[in-house]
Length: 102
Image (tube, rainbow, N blue to C red; front, side):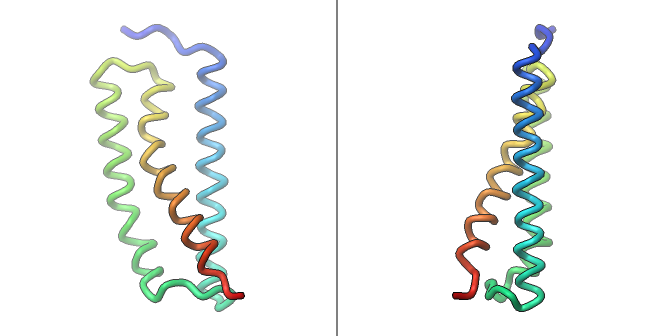
């Protein structure tokens, strides 16, 4: 059985979760701006925002499960599960920020 997570490790995990939430909120806002015509997103953006979630959440579940089966601590399992989601939200935020009208 793994050792208990330290307060610092739990704080780090909490901050990573908050960062994921903030970036996902940014992506939602940018996509809404595109739907309203305030930005110029790729024509397939609406389809992408639906289909990409399936792959991202499957990768997240797999990473969390793999970490749990390897005996990781709860904070490590959460971090492993958040990593694929964080990569996707960061990539979306970069792409959508570049898609803004001049």
